[in-house]
Length: 167
Image: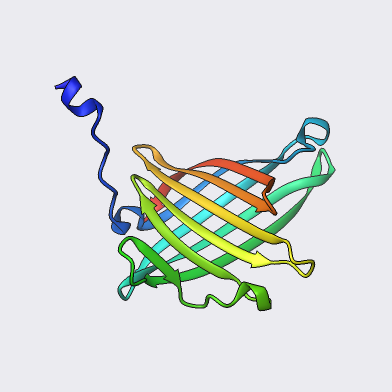
C-alpha cells in the first residue's frame, strides 16, 4: 500500500475547502532582516463564496519601528472577488485592469491544498511587481507565505500560521 501511494499526487482541493475566517500571526523578512530584524504581523483572512466564485479579504497588522515598548502599528486591508475564468481551476479578479496603464492584474488558482492569489502591477519606471499569496490548508488551520518580487528580485517574504475561527 505504501508503494502504491508513494507516486500518486493528491487531488486539488475544491475552493470550498478554503471558505472561512482565519486568524493568526507571523513575521516578515527581507534582505536587511539580518541587520535590522524582522517585523511581526497579525493576520485576518476571510474567504467566502460569491456567486460562482469567491471573495478574499485579508488584513495585516504590521508592528515595526518605534521603540521596543511601543512599536509603530500599521493596518492594511485588501479585498478581491474572483470569478471562474474560461480555463478550469483558474479564477480572474472582477476588477483586474491593464497593469501597463496603471492598473492591477489579479488571478487565483488552487493546486493541491494551496490557494494562490497573484497581484501584478507595473511601476512608473517600467519595473514589474508581483505579489503572491500562498494559503495552504492544513489540519491545524492555514499556513500563509507571501512573496513580493520586483523585476525578478525577492523584496519581501512573510510567513505565518492561522487557525480557523469562523465560517
